[in-house]
Length: 202
Ligand SMILES: Nc1ncnc2c1ncn2[C@@H]1O[C@H](COP(=O)(O)OP(=O)(O)OP(=O)(O)O)[C@@H](O)[C@H]1O
Ligand SMILES: [Mg+2]
Image 1 (cartoon, protein in one colour):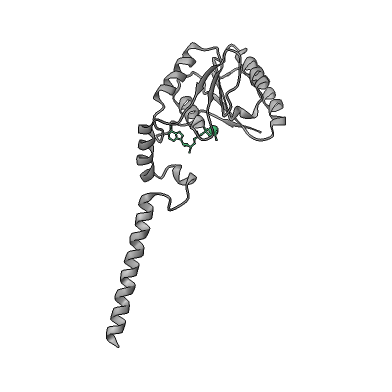
Image 2 (cartoon, rainbow, N blue to C red):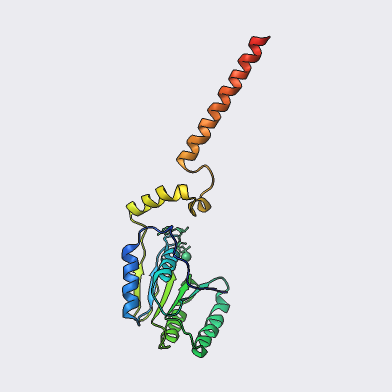
């Protein structure tokens, strides 16, 4: 299945990755070669790709596809969508394909070649967990956030209630543990007070 996403909104909850964004802008200016953002699960490929698409200046909104499930059907769907672009007037300057690890290297090469054959398309970006061999590709190997940016994200993320809450269960943060311990102590003191009051009245 191919999920169609337009230009994403800039996300205020985005940390670091200044060099990586500059690298992407620079490759976009040079046009031509396919770009690959590769890295292990959860490292931030989608987040970076969205931030790039949200902030890059283009005349027409970028086209962003996310590939989901059914690898057997994907190429048929993708080829159909690419052929549609050949018939369209408003061809985007950037086509981004996220979760591209579903595609074989051969298919990625074919997709990149066919898309870049269209003059209006300046850049094709793939985000994928596996580092593929694509001819002429410029590859950005994404590592974890720098320690400073990761600390900043943890510090500022908590009060904002960002995605972190979705990935971790309740009570996993130290301050949450401390809060529940304090509540338990208060409840214990109230119970003890009530008990003493009861005994002294008899
Ligand atoms: N620079 C960042 N600033 C803020 N949050 C980030 C950043 N990078 C990653 N995250 C958060 O980390 C989580 C994982 O990021 P993301 O989904 O982009 O990873 P991914 O590399 O695309 O993973 P997958 O291989 O599973 O697709 C998300 O909740 C995302 O919001
Ligand atoms: Mg992703």
